[in-house]
Image (cartoon, rainbow, N blue to C red; front, side):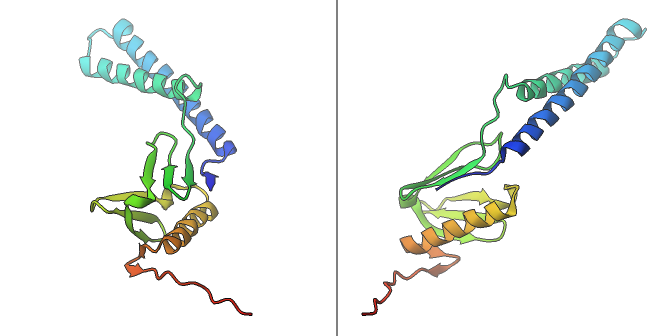
Length: 166
């Protein structure tokens, strides 16, 4: 199962917002730096440093908005062997093998994977923009945990076999 967590329309709106904010910060910081260097009688290091910082942050946002630096896709992928996900466009990709999972704690906004080593990994469902997709991901993990016989929210899932009626 593969689910794209960031619809293309929202992805384009995010890039447009980054582009506009980057232009605003770059132009504003550039103006403030020029004003500090050329038009002010007394040079103020703090103001100049803040202006340079605004230009750098704005240039970084411009680079993301114009695809010089590429934003990654946010997705959730689950196979019988592993779970791979990235919840935000600037976040890291997480990969968890089902063999490493000993228990799952699923709440409305968070999935906690308790690993065999005792460590925990988190999937923030609240970071998914569309509630329907977050519920779909949550229910898919819920069903997979039951199928694999894992401890789910503190309760051991029994591996039952449905009786076939003749």
